[in-house]
Image (cartoon, rainbow over all chains, first blue to last red; front, side):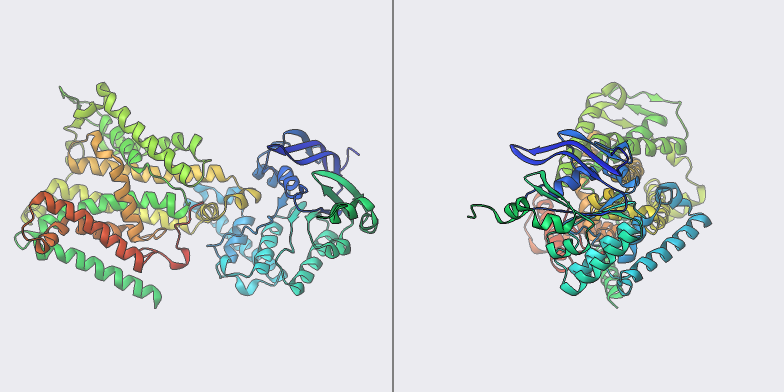
Length: 256
Length: 351
């Protein structure tokens, strides 16, 4: 068990009196596509925020490859290889699609002020390769025709693609997708699902929060169901789907 | 076409503003023009620094006057000067250039000092902290009379810069019936603008500039992508503060004496007005914004005198600022992104 990729122990987070996350023990294994589902307010996004460092837990610990990442800064967690996207897409509106990708892919050294003042030939070479890499990713995601458009001119679905591309250019080991299909038209959603599945096959560990149950059941290796912050079911998609607790959480017993 | 239209409008407005000087001062327009361009240069430089903060990075800095003040005070205290009521001239001091460099670095460090606790705040909260810090700086300088001269300020420092004025320059300027000392300061500030803009242009097109723009757009996304947003913002704060420090030094040398009343919040708001007028995020916008702003400031009282024939000087001064406000409002209605700002990058939505 201690060899799991991401390990969460006794994680608790409350907002005022509201219990957002209360997870005793949860692990995510390498190279597995795990979906996290649950009714609204189940704590899915909060769990993402805690893992990626955007919120501080009340108690508990999170390990990544046996390294304690509890209370680490988001950018440090990201540098370890855990890259996340956001429920409400966060693209850099007034930068071009190409700039969005190049910024993301750029190394810390390349971004430095001194480098930017002196601009050695090495930097120029690096920028050139970064540009090529960005175009490669845009072509893979079929947004290359928008390369020089401002990101805010993209459709909702294209923004989701850009956000995905921006994460991929960092060669992440773990990709955390927060509702990648929200607001995406059915055709594009299908393509996106296929892309996500291919990414998983290529060796990226994927955690995904998603409301589209059919999509989740189709591509996930494992499904974790949260309700009121706690795990109520965990297993293969088909088993989870038939779990009475899950049906109850989603439909409610005394439906009002 | 769109770009050239923007430029034509800006140039026409600049020419019109400057021609007001000639129209209203048939006796000696050059003297007034020299004064105007000196002030315009100094304020443009300060606005370029502010543009690094707001235009490039989206930081709401309302304490710009304090950065200018730190640059000015540190530099002046290092060159030969006289401070305070008794005002004895201290003969020994550093040469101007090394004092200037230390002053700029001090302004940048003040930016860092202010930024460390404050930069994590967003939008309007940062604005409140910066305006408060600027007032603390000003009051501190006022009360540390033994060092800074307090309310009496610092005088007799001008020669530190003016002694480098070449002789042919004096002859040429005197022939034009202008004040060589002021034109010298003005000239140096425009030279500084030139080199500062080269630096900013280079940075704008660099990975660093790209990173700052990303911070401006969405800090959370920047952090999720493994970039240290706080450090990027601090660097931007320091660079802009350093440029403001340089502008502050020229401002002090232009006046020939410096008191804390020079660095009141009004100075900050003038610089803001110039930056917005020229176009937030625009490279050369502050230059044109500054010339037009100062032409309006210096000539509107004469314009007002045409409208209100029986008004006295004090009343005209009041009308002047009302007219300045009106002109800025009109401009903002028809060109909300400023004279040279990009419409696509129109920004006043601060996070």
